[in-house]
Image 1: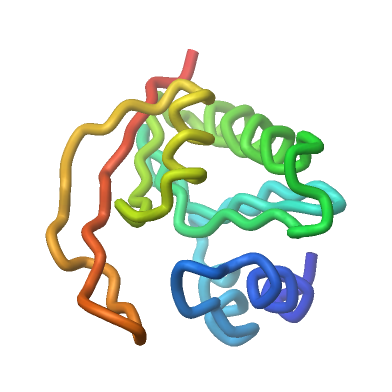
Image 2: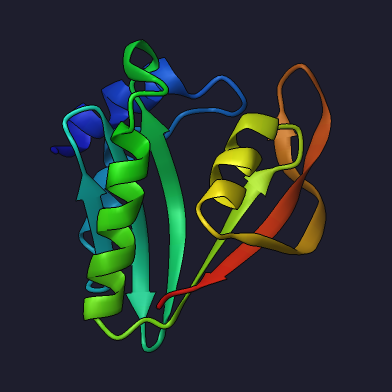
Length: 137
């Protein structure tokens, strides 16, 4: 997926926060440790440094929710991160984003911390970030 395609997808998918721009995606993808795992209708973008992976952004096409696209992209991310030497994956998710938190829990992630007032929201007070992690097999 191109940075423009990623930005177009998150513009449609992100309801809980401001979507990334094509420039932000291009900058992230240019990093030497970037990892993009994508399917036709979803992607997971993160980094792998040493033995840890971090998920930075996940999006699925709203017209294809609950069809497995995000799960397939996440499985690809896990496999590729493990191939690069990662043994654990970390992420942050908005506390108010219950569907995303449930998605990660179904895929073996556990809540390990909380960052108060982490995500700014244009329509109210900042939201907390739940830090989640999972060990790769």
